[in-house]
Image (tube, rainbow, N blue to C red; front, side, top):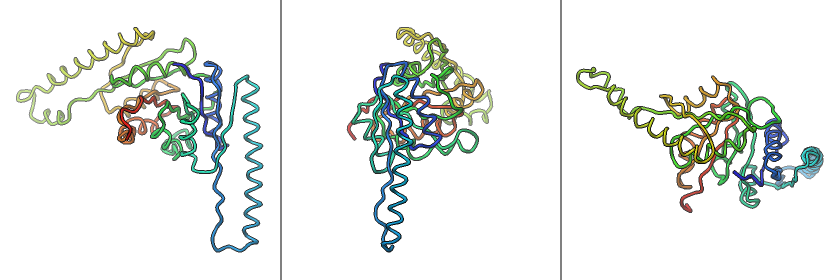
Length: 303
């Protein structure tokens, strides 16, 4: 995977600084440039206030702008000192809209954003910017969470469903990993809907284990095929097959094995992408103990 342009959403928070720390070594690894995207608040006039209050608000707003400019300049200098080409986009408007538009305008290969929380219940607080970005971006999106780190990922976990997006997810996830890092692959498989009811009928009346064996055999065949495709693409992997709901399997595996990155693919028509993401990728991000890379396939229509 060639990465030439990385966009980093920067609201000067701790979360966006974590995102920038992860973006810098990726840029160094690939010789990419970093575009820092900062959304300014809209200081539209407030109705029914007198001129004195408006003047005070204007002074506060101006002071904030100066402070933000200084903070942004400090971050830009730190990036440039690493020998990375850097640019900045600072516009007034909703952060999600500005970031999505900038990704298109700059032909970004990767967008990196932070979250509001790291652990516990705060995992659910991924924020509207991260949510909007993963739903609407046409390029890969890295949502950064977990402990601060200024390095490439060491223990990536790739979740595959054997769709056309799975191999791309594997290759793109490996591109964010440190050289020589072991990439693990997991597939969550489930019995057909309604199979649980067969156990109530008893083995004599409905041999439900036969259904399970047939399903697992098919899954194993798909895993073997994927492993061969990965090898042809230059990656030696072994797919771990785990029975269970995808989000639960992936997040529990990541937590149990101390992975620092989960990679999931997003596929489907743009018009229904929101629903597809909501069922797997977005749910994974909300529950993940670590950063998550959402790998997008090109939209199949223009809806």
